Amino acid sequence: AVTVGVVGATGAVGKEIVDCLNKSSLDVSKLRIFGSSRSAGSTRDAGKFGEVPVELFDVAAARECDVVFLAVSGDFALEHAKAISEGDDGAVVIDNSSAFRYDKDIPLVVPEINGECTKGAKLIANPNCTTAIGLMALYPLHKLFKLKRVIMSTYQAASGAGQPGMDELQEGTRAVLSGEREVAENKIFAHPLPFNVIPHIDKFQENGYTKEEMKVTWECRKICGLPDDFPVSCTAVRIPTYRAHSETIIVETEEPVDIEAARKAFEEAPGIKLMDDTANEIYPMPLTATGQYDVEVGRIRKSLVFGDNGLEFFVVGDQLLRGAALNAVLVAEEMAK
Ligand code: HSE
Image 1 (cartoon, helix red, strand yellow):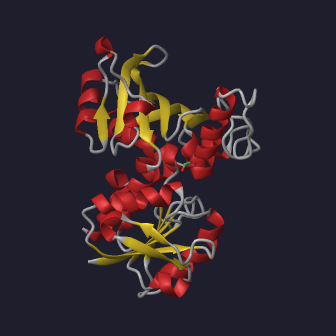
Image 2 (tube, protein in one colour):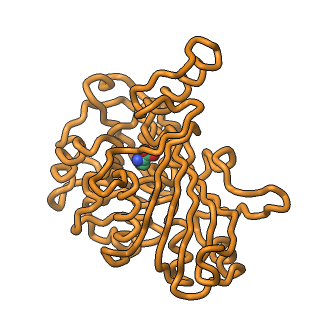
Image 3 (cartoon, helix red, strand yellow):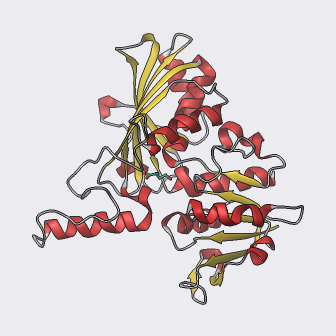
């Protein structure tokens, strides 16, 4: 049995980690919740773990745990993750921020793809939500037909910006619909999100891509063990949905693609739900993927651009679950095997 600590349990991802732990096969003897001085002293309803007191975060206390989930900022992770995990008696830290994702010595893990990288590791990085969701479908295809190039367009929910993003979408939508405002206010997003689509997530880079888009490129390469120049191009767009990210994915492959074999691979891959019956208007949508562990895959078709060596499809996953909390808890389960 393990003692588990969650730092940031009151945030959108932290709450889902506690929920996933309630359903996990991980044998948790004790759940500890760490927070800032603002939340310390209060308690949190943690399901089967009861009312858990929020303790003021402290490295020594976190080190008493066997596993610590960090669902906080990259700055916090940079400051504390190594101190929590170092030495034989340090805790295993699973960090949800991007602080360590691109560090060569730190595994970046989607358990179904490269779970073996967790062996012996004390600090593990959880991928960006968009990458984790897309890779659930991309990896089975890569194994069968060997990817040559990947083009992705994403439609990302407000929850990618955490609870404040979800609140801004909800309050802004209400204010516009009630006639209180003509255009919603924005603090979290670059522009008002209600009734809008914003082709801008995270900071613009020198090459014209945003950091969110480059994360997809960098992380696909690292997790799948692809070369440093493997071509992955993404356009990441924020849309007014609540917590599931959608992705159009177009691949060119080295081997010709057999559509039925691709469909079968999706069907058999863990963590995927095939939603691909256009005759009955069944395809992936945020409405159906929200709250689900599986990533939905559908709209599977031969590519008009890449012909026999290509495939186009649509993927939707709950970004707080597969894209964050669930992936982190699955990493912990993998390590307990
Ligand atoms: N960066 C993502 C987003 C969240 O803003 O949608 C991924 O964890």
